[in-house]
Image (cartoon, rainbow, N blue to C red; front, side, top):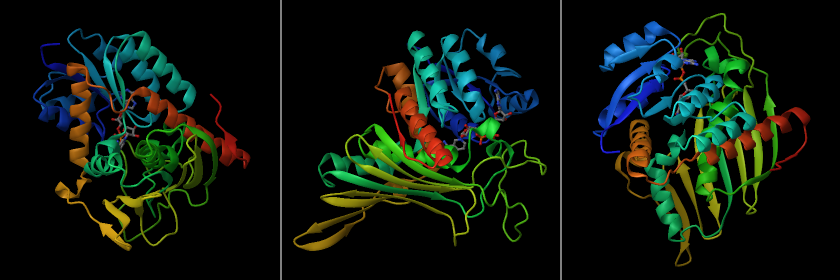
Length: 356
Ligand SMILES: NC(=O)c1ccc[n+]([C@@H]2O[C@H](COP(=O)([O-])OP(=O)(O)OC[C@H]3O[C@@H](n4cnc5c(N)ncnc54)[C@H](O)[C@@H]3O)[C@@H](O)[C@H]2O)c1
């Protein structure tokens, strides 16, 4: 492909701005269209960004011949249908996380991408953080030895956004599928992408949205209504065992009675350990002393906009220059297997063995 990549945005809500701004910064991209079920929103968005075509439906946008690739930035329940339509219309797809509502849908997306010979990349944006790249550099030099345990937390004290996030029909679940997905994927990526073999998990539905809380601001998605009901879990805790013997312990919450929200990811190997989130620190023994190393990384390596720029640049590079995709659809499928198993374990109260 000698010309610029012609890109369309599906879903003009909050996260789409991060995609659009990054595409705008990429000299090899021309943003040619956007669409949203809220047609006026799509029109306003097109005007704000100078995008020449705006549509009220995906089907209309996909009729465009001069469109090569799309970003799918819709509610989780739209990831499967809109991605399938785009792939069948021969467009490459960058689909936001989670890849789908469940493994079955994810496998269908994987199959259709293959049948149509299109790239389907999953938006695992944390893989593109500076901290992740630097951790990988150290790991490749053997700094951590055999990594056998990862502990990850993505906890909010009072952060249920409401709207579609709180509606299981549209989201597929609560903090596990929304927040847990980020840190479970990052943990698996840092471990070298082992396959999960079993899972033990519990979810809790005790607190709901806590709309009544005063003294702090509440963040809501587009289309939020005070009448929204919460049908998703408040919190989840789970243990995932992988086929290389390593184990991940993960916690995520929208609402939990803790002092303050926490995001942390700790990695433990037999030669060293590390804190990867919220900043990178390395813990080792040297000359019979315990030493702590804090690599110097531009802006700390964990800046949201920079991660998105790296993700979008990589997607474009994969299509235009046939670069190997860092977040292939297979990784999205594997993540859905883990999420499904955690929800199943929470329901049954038993360990779930992941069969393939
Ligand atoms: N990578 C990240 O860090 C990150 C952060 C936030 C959200 N997300 C993901 O991005 C997606 C969107 O989240 P958001 O916060 O932008 O939500 P949002 O509610 O702000 O925006 C979603 C938009 O999609 C539109 N929409 C819904 N279904 C549609 C369909 N089938 N066709 C066309 N338009 C449709 C809605 O009208 C809305 O404008 C979700 O899957 C979410 O998990 C990722």
